[in-house]
Image (cartoon, rainbow, N blue to C red; front, side, top):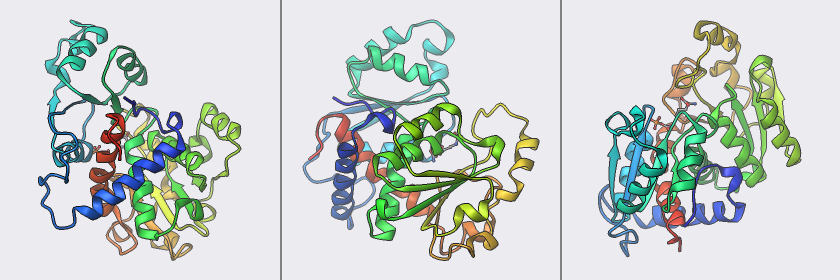
Amino acid sequence: MKHFINLKDIPAKDLRRILIDAKKRKKARKKLNNLDHDKGTPLKGKLLIQMFEKSSLRTRLSFFLAISQLSGRTLTLRPDELHLSKGGESIEDTAKILSSFGDAFMLRTDNDEKLEEFKKHLTIPIINGLSPSSHPTQILSDVFTVEEIKKKPISKLNITWIGDSNNVLNSLIAASIKFSFKLKVGCPKKYQPNKNIMNYIKKNKNKITIYNDPKKAVLGADVIFSDKVISMNDKVNKKKKLKDFKNFKINRNLLKKCPRAIFLHCLPRGSEVDENVFKSKQSKVWLQALNRVHVQKSILLYCLGKLR
Ligand code: CP
Ligand code: NVA
């Protein structure tokens, strides 16, 4: 049994094994319908319990399809219906019940400590479906998408992030260390990654460069990643933050500086990207969203010790 909480804690070779499995499975499903089962019904009889303490469209749907295609089932709990959310039951006891009724637990939460606390008491794997500090299932899937489109290992590509220093960027930074790719980050000085993240980058002698000029950050890019300037539950002066990011909008002019780049965005989007770019040929956001099903299937198999 393996947990999937943060990319930085998962061995690089395991992350690569997950991607290799996802590629094989995706290829083998070309003629199948959404709910058709993969050959071998690898998670027959298994139940994935999901809980979202914050909004979700893609993560919810993609985990539903992922476990369904592996012949398992999913049940989504509403946090407001559990005793836990009202202080009427401990994480320890909730975890005990989840472990005896289910086979894996996927949690989207606004509290990183909660993931750790659940991990301590669960006897089934826990998967982080987004927390304040990371969004690991998203970024592993994005590595898959980049390699699928560019037909090259991501270590041979130049990756750029334009946007806030948030959970998705933290996972991208962890991925750049695990998969050894060059990463340029473009953001206003005030919104650069925090000390802990900068120390993690330094400790791993990684090649991450931070620019406060978006035009410099995108030069030579094969991929441009972005995300909303204001994340869920971001307790900032929203108007001020959006204004601070005004020069970091991804528009046609910016993309002219990196003509071979594809544009990726985890979604949902805000005002950080121009409609023209979002709907252009360079934008691969819909394939990116769909690929989450394929990669999360292999994440589930990894966690349950069934990766081929
Ligand atoms: N990208 C992503 O995680 O989307 P949802 O918030 O809709 O799940
Ligand atoms: N950074 C965003 C990602 C949403 C999928 C957020 O946390 O709201």
